[in-house]
Image 1: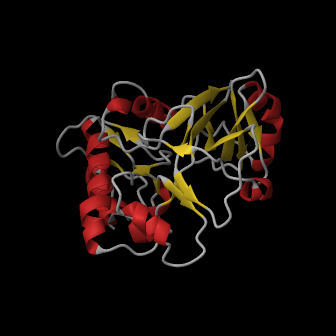
Image 2 (image 1 turned 180 degrees about the vertical axis):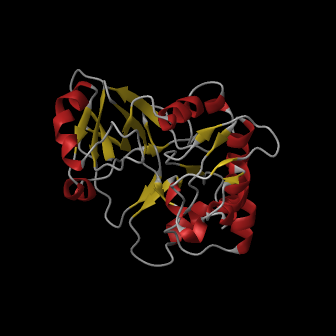
Image 3 (image 1 turned 90 degrees about the vertical axis):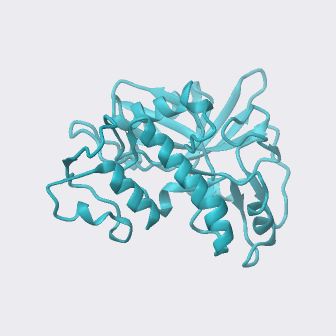
Length: 273
């Protein structure tokens, strides 16, 4: 679910959001697109305002200074660097854009993200997990609210030097960090990696984005921990194959028809594909 932060007169910061993408969850739990409307009042209590897809994509973007520390944005900073062909000053009540994801209460995804988003793990410079703004709980559902970063895979082709010297380094750092802390992502592919830049490109390649990629501010982060696991870091660990697997192009071959596999090794192979 997409969103934008707002500030109301005499109130704390507010957020607006759109859409949802709940993943595999316990059989007793389900969350459909039409269910979002039933939580309007709940979100308003937490300074969140839901947007339809059409409203969200046509809304003005925040006119804010990008976060000096992408993984630790302050209240007065935007989550991402951005550019638009015709900059529009944001209305006084609009703040930063976020994503909201609905998961079952007590799900492993919520547990893993809570672990990655809190001290001491969040403060580690090798933690390449998209910033989590908040986690909102109801009886059966937890709403994960995280910064809305840009699509990493949709950027223009990069040079081998940039891939090897910047992107691959950050991907490996983030994955090694998760594995050192017993966390398996389980679903690594381009849709589940973001970068801290959101642009409206008027030409390809985009000069502004190309310049940003060469700066020291460029960061990439993992999202979507719906297939994640917390496991002992025992060398050679094997677990049974699950029914879910990433898209074939990015899937580790041992997930196809195998009885058991090493999930840490599968993560590494999926990242390299």
